[in-house]
Length: 119
Length: 447
Image (cartoon, rainbow over the protein chains, first blue to last red):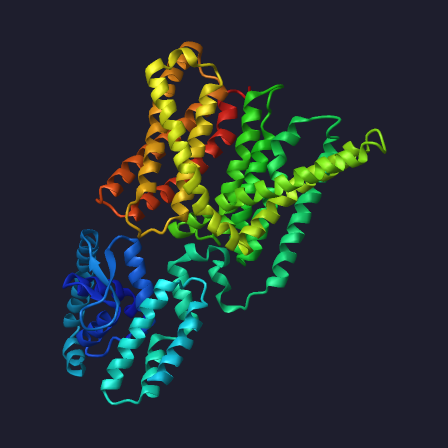
């Protein structure tokens, strides 16, 4: 299954914020987590994550710090802020509304079982 | 692993060439690449294979640097033009384009001068219209550079046409004060009209608005530099021709000065667009230099006036002086903002700037109180109305800016909010300038 590019782009911000809401992280680890969560279906071009993170930084949704963990290389860690949590909550509301509407209409027309069967 | 190290170094150098990617970003991407290679290594790939896969996953560098450019337009606002993405840069035709528009502006101002028989006569219409002979060419230059489509060309031209009609159809009375105000405010209105083609029509984008603020600041610097050089040139010209003819030197200046001043508007814009590496480093230095100086001057003035009282010191010009002062302070704030990296934590400079803004506000409130009383006694003239309006527009802006930067300094909001406030407020300035040009004259019966 190839997920539509617009959909990937639209879900990128809430995904990253949600992952950071579970704890601080750095670019490579965030990408790995995205792959895990989507069972490898959500493929991002790795580099594109960084402009996105920098945008969140500018909006004040995350803060950042360079750190070298005891074992491992120097990395730039990102931490979600209160503003970021608020933005995430807002995004969640929007996505829940969208998925609920889609779910309702699909159940109504009897498409859902097929769709689930394929997945 | 030596081979891979060399390959990584090569890749780093290549990435670092993208203008919007800075050293810190390269470090971050480098760390990512190494993580990826290490994981692939562990999965059993050879070092070479691991490197290739990791680089491929990173994405092709063109689109990567474009994404960085989109986010960090501040770093390369010079070549910002996102519509340029698909075509190679043509630096050679760039200066030619600018030259054509500069010459057109220079010619237009000469035609106007000859038609008005300036300086033998000084008709009011020339003074009123002067920016209309220059700034449309600047707008045209940007419309071309940003490759606007036909609809946007029309939209970009509309304000110029409307303003030209309004300014020339109004029946001003002789020695009209509103006419002078129009001459003063029209360039401001038209400058905002230039913003539309400058932003490629994306006037809603706050990032583009900030780019325009930055552009304005740099343009002022370049224009001042050109004017300085031009002044030296003209002074020497006058001295050299003086012995030859009685009025030859005056003739030369008559021809060169207006055309030079008009052409320089476009040349300065072109310099900002293409050669800003020099000035880019000047912007932070200039703000560093002048913000503290203004802060000291303003706080001393505020303290002095607070002690001595304001009422006695006023004459009719003072509100205008304070408007100029607030404009300069606002310019400094905007300029510092556009040169600042948005995610740096609050620093000393932000505090100094807040001191400058707060002192200016205190001063202004005192002056405003006295002026309102004066207007109550003596009535509202066009000049007082314009000055009072501008003062209020600036006061609201700076008061909110001071409030927001206080919250920023105490760590309660991100710097981004301050930027947002300023970029959201820009249309208010345009609106006020347009009001002075279009509404004030009929309101005061063109007097």
